[in-house]
Amino acid sequence: MQLRQAKFHIGQIVKHRVYPFRGVIFDVDPVFNNTEEWWTSIPEELRPRKDQPFYHLLAENAQTTYVAYVSEQNLLVDETKAPVAHPQVDEMFVDLKDGIYVTKRHGALN
Image 1 (cartoon, helix red, strand yellow):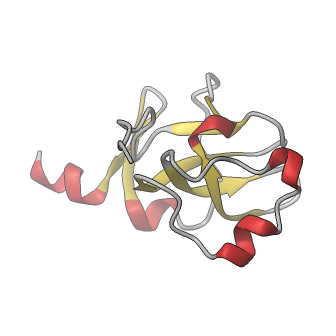
Image 2 (tube, rainbow, N blue to C red):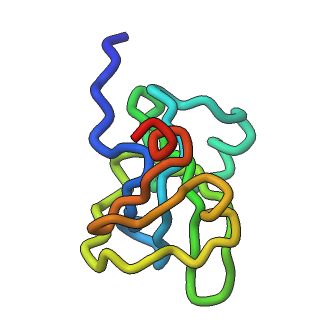
């Protein structure tokens, strides 16, 4: 299996292609790395391929914040550049610059 280069990166704000939520990426798996139970819980007609990057998001919708695991095919860049209101953002990121969060690790090196 050939690994694809991830289209999105840590700190980038994205939105779901189908569902009304957005979030900031805090980790990337080169291919699916969750449970089979999680994968089969997705309706078959919406189930993503496993051979693509999957992203861990600090996510928000109109009602709540949560952690989401989303396939690359279901993400789009969020053009609003608005901050993400998830309570863990400040634990992982130090700043929001032009719609991209700067990680604490990266920010400490500069």
